[in-house]
Amino acid sequence: AQSVAQPEDQVNVAEGNPLTVKCTYSVSGNPYLFWYVQYPNRGLQFLLKYITGDNLVKGSYGFEAEFNKSQTSFHLKKPSALVSDSALYFCAVRAPYSGAGSYQLTFGKGTKLSVIP
Amino acid sequence: EADIYQTPRYLVIGTGKKITLECSQTMGHDKMYWYQQDPGMELHLIHYSYGVNSTEKGDLSSESTVSRIRTEHFPLTLESARPSHTSQYLCASSGQGAGELFFGEGSRLTVL
Image (cartoon, rainbow over all chains, first blue to last red; front, side, top):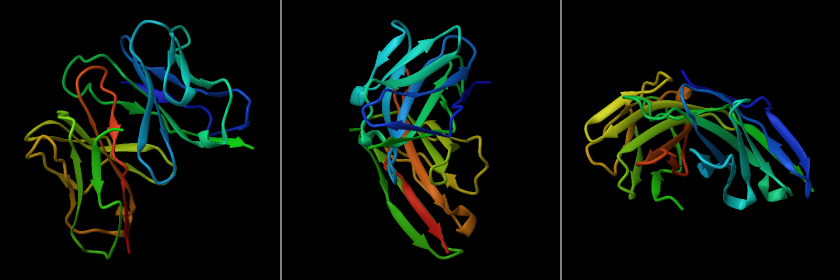
């Protein structure tokens, strides 16, 4: 079975400071990892993904994520936070395809990011 | 922007009514999904489909039903709505490759 943990329900950061939203995962085989953002009363928007290759993945809106296989982590980062980054962030994982049902992503419970002006 | 559309965006309805939430995508994706989400909370997969005439129940038991008669269309139906069905329903699709999901804007259902 695959699982995702987002250990922080909420992260507060001052505008202009770097931000990190944490994610750890458990999956059989090499993981496919994803980050999504959700603004109030909206659907989820895809930010970035890791499949293979460089451990540092760059995505939309200046976000990046670092894959660490030994720590089974995929933390989301941004060098300088904006007030407009305030939203709910979801990490997701899935294993490489190996049969029926394995296309499904498993989502974390989400982390609410608040950027304080 | 992903081309996946949900209607209605907001619906307030009385107990016992039948409702259908529509979801359509124009990306030709074979896989489609319905998630249920309470505000600011985690997502729960309630239904998915890997192609026409293929539907499966997800991790969270739901009284809703789905159909997949056309590739682009994946409606969700509640035969008799109850207050416990009040939630946001998110439709998503994915194609080949890594399988990232593309989400619609959601349908927020309130049952009085």
